[in-house]
Image 1 (tube, rainbow, N blue to C red):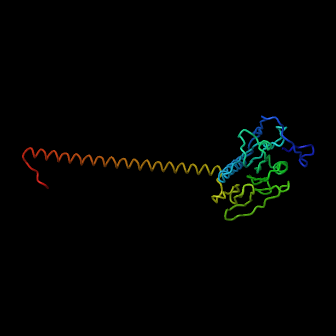
Image 2 (image 1 turned 120 degrees about the horizontal axis):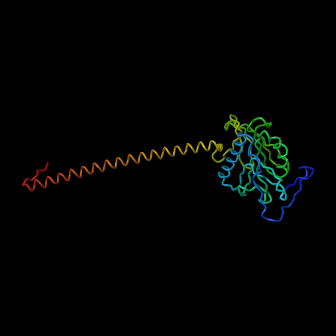
Amino acid sequence: MALTRDRNGWDDVVLRDPPQESGIRYPSDDDEPMADTELQYHAITDAVFALKMHLRQLGRAGTVRGNCALYYDPANLTAYVAPDVLLAYEVAVPGEEGYAPWVYGKVPDLVMEMASPSTHPQDSSLKWERYAALGIPEYWQYDPHHQYLTEDLLGWQLRDGTYVPIPLQPDSPRGALIGRSSVLDTDWGLDMTTGILRLWNPVQRRWYLTVQEAGTAHEKEATRADQEATRADQEAARADREAARADREAARVREAEAEITRLQVLLQRQGHTPKDP
């Protein structure tokens, strides 16, 4: 099943069955840059990273992709959009393949767009309409530049074929503006201090790390492991020195005892009986 665009646009969509022939490849790459700016790039990679960690935390199978071609007409390989972030539960999409709903038997569960100078008008109009027409349950927009959207974080849930806004609420204990994702069963949060988009870890009760934070944490852990290994090596070397010292002391004792025994034997041979001390 797929949605195709007719001459009237996306107000009227047509459901079509996929072609019967097999072996059709739906490429993932849309030949467009992944991001316009560094801020957009980091926003995409951080969201993908957090969603992958979320799936792992919950023990759920699924696919999380960034800038993945999402096809909507099985007969037309040029009919696709490329959401910045895509999540689909219970499917495994090869890294080189795009997402064709008729191949996997479902549309993605969530898509997200990161606003940029060149893409934000389409994100709020054409893509918004296409995602709703496809029946994607949840759509989020985030503006890492803080200048292209009416709010830096916007979310919608699909109800009766129409996207309904997800309310955002300030959460002082977590220091963020919170939007509840029913699809993820957790919260997206807009950090009130940095403006960075975060995803809440409901199991560990903290925000999932960004890519940079995870890298820093990994470096700290590696440094701590190196320090522990160095301390262990130093302790082992100290133990070796102590063992060597003990061996030398034992050898000296044995040599002294052997010398005493030799002298006692010599005295006995000379007719002297050593007195007990």
